[in-house]
Length: 256
Image (cartoon, rainbow, N blue to C red; front, side, top):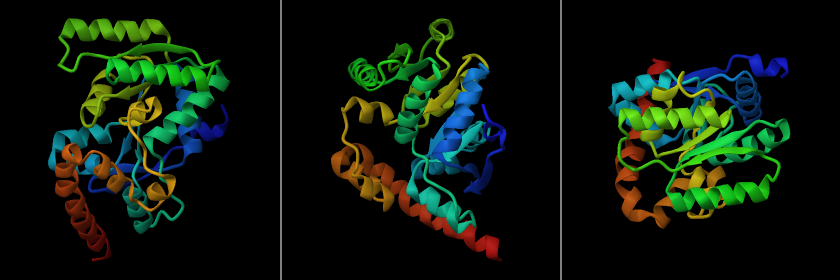
């Protein structure tokens, strides 16, 4: 890898969470370097929901800040970083990072794996990935039970992941479960673990993704709310207004 992969990632705190000022190029360079070095790493993609979960739960905040990188998944976080003076920051969302990393892994010959999703979604996901990246080694794919695994079941899952040879492990268990799982398994799973959430559903085609223009305008949440109102109404009503208020307080405190 080039020296770029070894450059430290700059971060800025957003409501206490250290969010990276980064790009897709850095996602690729760091992830491939760590994967080729057989490192166990934790990479997260934060949106307003995740930031507010951390604001409400100090233990979850600590877990996020113990990750190797937390990327700004949603445009509100990219805007927040720009408001904090990081004018060059980009949105780095989980589904797009998954797509570019799968292409990069295929080119570099790095085995990838998937952990999470329902059996039907996971099967569809793997089929799509095989079609798009026929030379990619999909070394592992497993849909765990929805319940908490016993210690014996968890140890067996770790053994299966390790023995598969997967060096990039995409984890789709939903927030905050997937972030907690990744942190708990860092050092046990010899792979770069990326908590990518809805990327499984989007790639599999089980859920529609917002048009690109809505993502650029910070309206992807509105599209998701319109398509899943029952599941997402409370999340958005609870978190979005509070995020605006809390961040404005942070911003004004910086000018005081």
